[in-house]
Image (tube, rainbow, N blue to C red):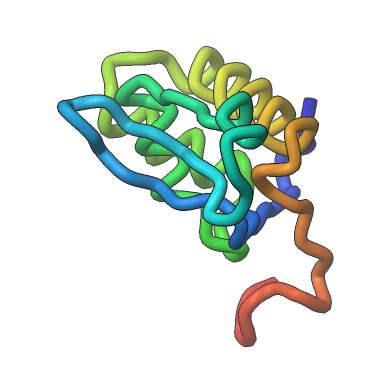
Amino acid sequence: MTNAAETFSKNGGFAFRVVAGEAVLAPIRGGVSELGSIFTLNEVGAEIWRLIDGARSSDEIALAVCEQFEVSPEQATRDVRSFLKRLLDRGLVTAVTNKERAPGLP
């Protein structure tokens, strides 16, 4: 799992689209061999993806999820950290160091 202060940025090699009501992450480059790299996201997963900006921490994302969906802060934190870990493991996001964070952010 990720830690509370960790931030992430999206891998620019994937495009996010909503197709027929389904949120999809698909590789931008590649051919048929990349079809195994297409990911579908539920509503919460899609919102987490939208919130990943290289500035918000995992806990800030969890707070936003908690405010938007009917879920406890504890559950939102567990779910967001677990989801971010899966995205990280699959190369869809990268961890951002303090040097890479947007100016003016801690």
